[in-house]
Length: 239
Image 1 (cartoon, rainbow, N blue to C red):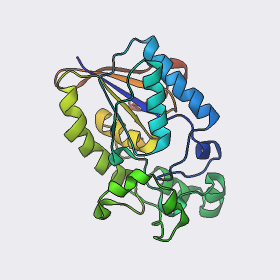
Image 2: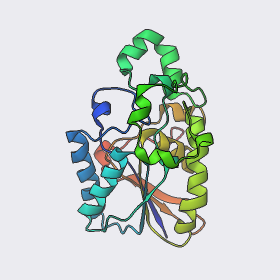
Image 3: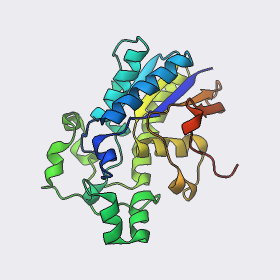
Image 4: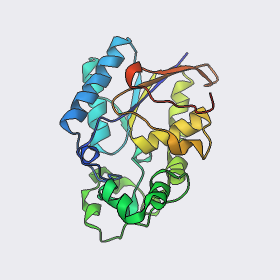
């Protein structure tokens, strides 16, 4: 029986400032460092073996992963993939969420932030935030680089990566750890738990609280739970 461990990175500096971060390569806040350490401690507490690790191109996810590996006495060997990057927030990138909600109105704000298939307006090619993306992004084919994304767009890069890369190792009985982002994980949760296009709007994923998924040989889900039950969030809304 293989195990899939999914963790959202610890709080970032822009999370703390309530700003849309997206692809900007923002670091962890002090609280985020603590949350990353807590994630590592939880994995060690449950005595979970980790065989292979994956993360995005963004330092907040990479630092969370390396902290977890260090806490568990594991070598800093892992796989990075741009497909696991956070959703690209387009022209909303860098904006304060409260101020943006006042400007756009509650309904439009929620559509941009939470809907399944509505993307914000695209980021301009001359946006100063382009220079603050991860340097690793230079390896992404230009034709595949987005200027904005809906959650559906994010899903369409995350899920093929999961199916093509991660599942082959799960089928070998390997335990996999993925350190990623709120929206790239929401996309993966949607696929794994068969969450509807409507219900996914309300899914929240806590920072620094790994979700353990125990899988059968055919990769169907046997059991799942957040390691820190006190900070768990509901996943399936029809139960």
